[in-house]
Amino acid sequence: MRMKEIAIGEIAIPLKTPFKTALRTVDRMRDLIVRIRLESGETGYGEAPPTAVITGETLSSISAAIREYLAPALRGMTFDRPGEVWERMDRVLAKNTSAKAAVDIAVHDAWARAMGKPLFRLLNPEGSGKAELETDLTISLNDAETMARDAEKAVRDGFRILKVKVGRGGNEDVERVRRVRRAAGADAVLRIDANQGWSPEEAVRTIRMMEDAGLDIELVEQPVSCHNFRGMQYVTARVETPILADESVFSPEDAERLIEERGADLINIKLMKTGGIYPAVKICRMAEKAGIGCMMGCMLESAVSVSAGVHLAAAEPIIRCCDLDGPSLCAENPYTGGPAYEGARIRIPETPGIGIDRVPVSFETL
Image (cartoon, rainbow, N blue to C red; front, side, top):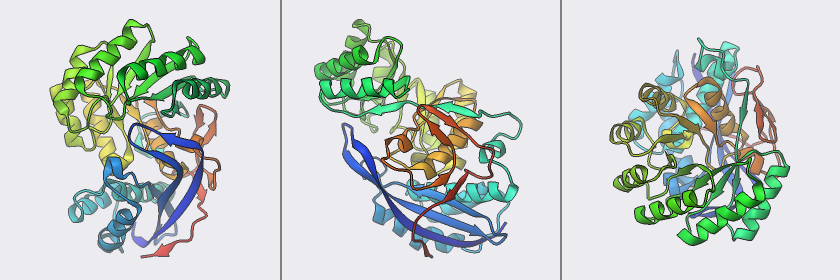
């Protein structure tokens, strides 16, 4: 396969309600879209959201990385497998994981279209894959009353699993979760995400308070700073609730350290952290070997890049739970095709690639 054209454009999508965490508040997605065309005619799409507080990337830096480094290195490249494209990208650009991810997703999409198969079938050619997934829904960080109201609505809308944002203070966070549990009911699954908001000691104290209160938490995500690896070890060793590493794991090298040093019980894989599907699969293999379960997560992304995450989650048995609610948070869906969201259920069609057919963006060819 030979790469004929690389193009970029921007898309803006309003959110149903502001997305609030311990790190930021966002009221709309404004993401960069990548389009790749092969000489054989197939087109693939990728996406990158600016998440400066996590990946260090802005919309301008993502655009510059692709425009000035990745596109010149890849234009006209011939490849047999998408991993060859990622390896070349990694030689010309050390970081910029979201920029790499957008291109990597577009390459995988075009490759799968050229092969005439849905991407998840090609990522797991020896297995059957999952035709349907279940995602959680994020309950943004607000006052306890608002969060309880949002949780009650989410359950009414058919979401069984809720990802509750906390990280602003131990006692207040416990009250938030207590109110959410009461509103959501005993059958709801609650996942807690502190987004690096606690100190190690505060994390242990807060999680133990939730345990003692019988709030029945499935897992706690990234309780302390991503840079505080010893803090992650400290928390993991001192609470009964499983700890999920998110911002602490970007690369396969990060995953290797976490596994070897028991920095968490679970790993949250996000394509914008790993740099795309190719390195994400490497993390899956490492987790599989170690017997550590994974979550497939996303940043504040729309259906293009989330569809790629859906296909990876469908292909990988080690990915046992999903936080792929980006499209559910959008006030509108400007695309056609791709996985179908029916409340918490995500159904994966047998169409080639990631399945997105129409991307209403004004593209600039690089």
